[in-house]
Image (cartoon, rainbow, N blue to C red; front, side):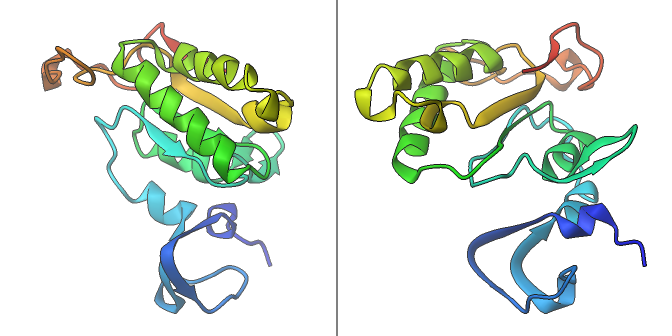
Length: 173
């Protein structure tokens, strides 16, 4: 039997309770979000999704289709940019990295540059100098600054927004 790869990719949210089966079914799970469920959500206008838990950038690899999982589902549902991890992450370094990332975004730094700057800053701490701590996260999608976020920002008007695939700022880093 062919298993839907979007059902094989699940996120356990805080307080999750589930009866584990392969694949988990929505009526058996509380606090569990499958990539298939993400596809059914309209995320148009969502500028950034951060999946900072362990291995959130992984999924099933399909020939000529790439990686199918949460990262792809959030983009397909309309998110402009997704940040996800490729391996097990350390809680302390991830908290520091994400705090610096958000601070960079609030200063109108582009999404990819903000993550790269945060990683560079984290590397300066000898405790986190190894790439295990600062390199697990990737940014896929639009690279530019967030609209309506940070000091002096005004919310973007709907007419000013372009669909996620229509900008020359699309990137995959």
